[in-house]
Length: 322
Image (cartoon, rainbow, N blue to C red; front, side, top):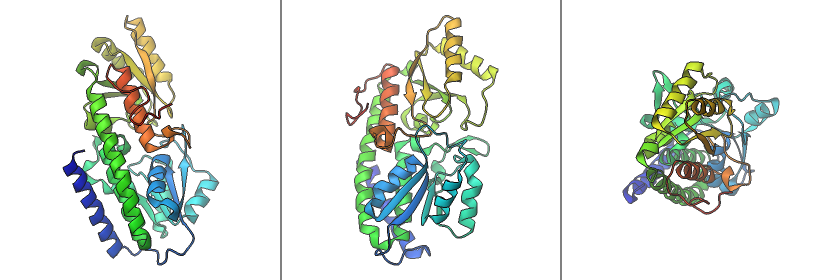
């Protein structure tokens, strides 16, 4: 993002915080109470909430490493956490699939439930008539807007913490700006004919739009959809015709369909390799660099760039990749 874009995002953040602080009925009267109990569905949202909230909140995420949120069914312990939470953040746009009804009911009963994607408006990518793509975190600039939404909601709920929230959000915004620039420069270094990302399911549309990639997913935007034989055969022909050197598996999705692509291409005389494993709907292990949003995207960008013939350091933007 340019300096002008960064200034604009800062201004939007300040404005949103001011507006919500002034008019929200869900504010918290005193910072002397116990820490705010925040529950998030995905770890991506939890990571941002934890950074911005700091010591003023305890953040718990329900959907962890290698777990597919499209298919996730909340356990009894999850329901207890959701009902006891002061704030609940979820992605929305049907990402959480079977949890959607549960989250809606908690909101209807007066719980402070917030879908971060609801604040992204026209930025949202439509994958078809009436079908919004929920994978907003794949574009760093878009995820910056989600971070702003979380900051504004926290400030409205807990006005006494406003200064700390704004300070931590500003620092995090600078890190996101560097990550966005790294993604743009690295992916642009891939030779144009090879700037094609083929994955297990269609989770990378926002990355494609932001950074000039062509993407093909074997399954649709939700892993609940099944890939048919014609889908796989069509992608095999695409790989052979375009001489695509690598395809990618995902940490939260079965790789059986990707292996079928590789075998089909080989039978047609074209060798395709697995370029690496990408984080799509879940981050890496808790406590690792890849278990943060910054590390997740750094890993994906670096892996894609190097596998498709571009230039990126082996250890990524911050030299922390495993």
